[in-house]
Image 1 (tube, rainbow over the protein chains, first blue to last red):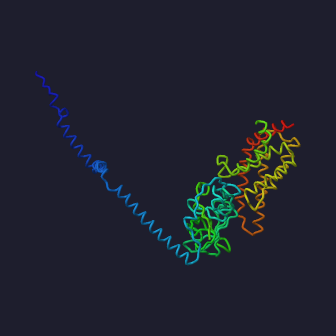
Image 2 (image 1 turned 90 degrees about the vertical axis):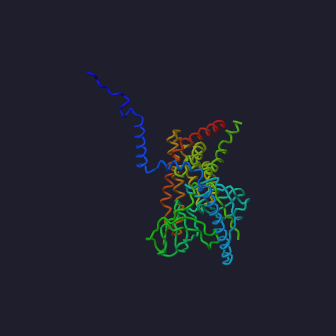
Image 3 (image 1 turned 60 degrees about the vertical axis):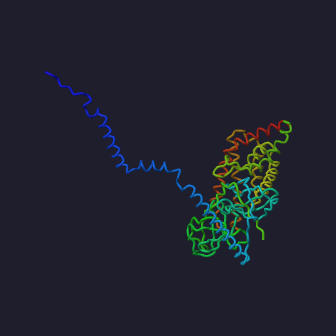
Length: 249
Length: 172
């Protein structure tokens, strides 16, 4: 009896062509299932150097900044003109003085900071001190080289403020904690949580429209005034550089 | 040089107190609160020099600190009482130099000064008919100050006591 034995080359898995066909169909399947994400990603990397975006975005950003600067200058000029008409206090860049904080005492009885600019640099008692975020305090006294600033959180601090939305004036009083109390002179004042508090535009003590804080809570039980708690926008315990607004009349 | 340093160590360390208050090292403070620094100097000095001298030095120290802080309230009475009391303990030999003793005495001294200072605030508010919002802030401040002072007093007071007593012995 003759034994028939199949040659190994005759099996399909030993055939190269069959594997190529399988691979081809497999690729088609992957392409179908992946919804061509591979192609899209490859296209992304190939075309990346030729995109118009990066450079054009920069141009766009610059032009928007330019436009905003022009608008800001125009508004400042208008503001200055109107303030002159109303005979209110004026401030210019020349009145600003940069200073660094050399001593900070924000957590004990005395809420004060010490700045490295004094009477020698033209700083005087009553000047407003502004940090990143807004007003932080008022110069209490000066030496030749330094000036001491009473913070808005200090128990003796009292500052006139303005609620922009409701067009209401109030008095911000420091109570030692991080959140000073805000007194409005009328009961049922139209104030809401989240309202911005600014320095009064008619103030002769502070520069106008400087951000101070945000109303955190309102005490409706209080009589006869409306009293609110204010979260200050400037973080006094973390400020290293400030601007002193020299008050000149 | 060493002799001079011993001679003027009390004066030098006394003059350093306002500088440390200005410096207010954040790594020695707790949530922004700092220890009552004058106690660290006054306690060891008073233990050696007795009640009356210490009361006068307490007055001087309070006067300098009041000038620094330029406030409505004064630290003089608290520091004078503490100076007298610390000096009295030293004179009566009721003080042993254990760290716990330094910590406890410093904490009580800090409490006395804090309470006297806070009472002045409360009296002013009552006279002005203002609401007592400062109450919780004051109590929190006193507790933080007492805690930190008691924690650091064994280190600073013991070290200064060692130096002051060494100088005192040299003088004798």
